[in-house]
Image (cartoon, rainbow, N blue to C red; front, top):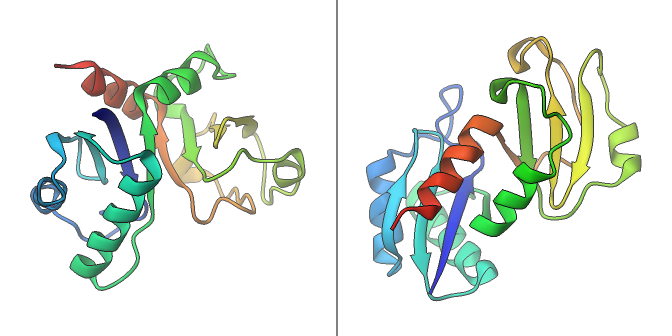
Length: 170
């Protein structure tokens, strides 16, 4: 059995994609995942499961589509992969709330980063299946658009650190 974190895309953000965390926990338990815990109301859940990462993703996406009557993207990561993202992050002196990590299906290319629109003071760096973004003025003020990240989901570094901590419990 492996421990996983699942990050749901566009859930409980800006009044869209309402999904109570109690329902997310119940869905995961119905899929026979063990030790299910959620963290904040933005679609973060950690659990233990027998299926592979890709199987977990497929199971969750199918069940969430049935529940919400629309597709909800899911990005699944292991503790080791998340620890790697944190250990190799390019902004060591940046507060965690100004460092955003966009989880993607593939490692972003330099062309993708160079194609960013409305970039002002933000800094971007490719990680493994993730894009690191430093928002010096805060994400809420940024108009940055990076092609290829539309199906990704982002969390600030503080959230990723807490998820890693939750994955290490037990």
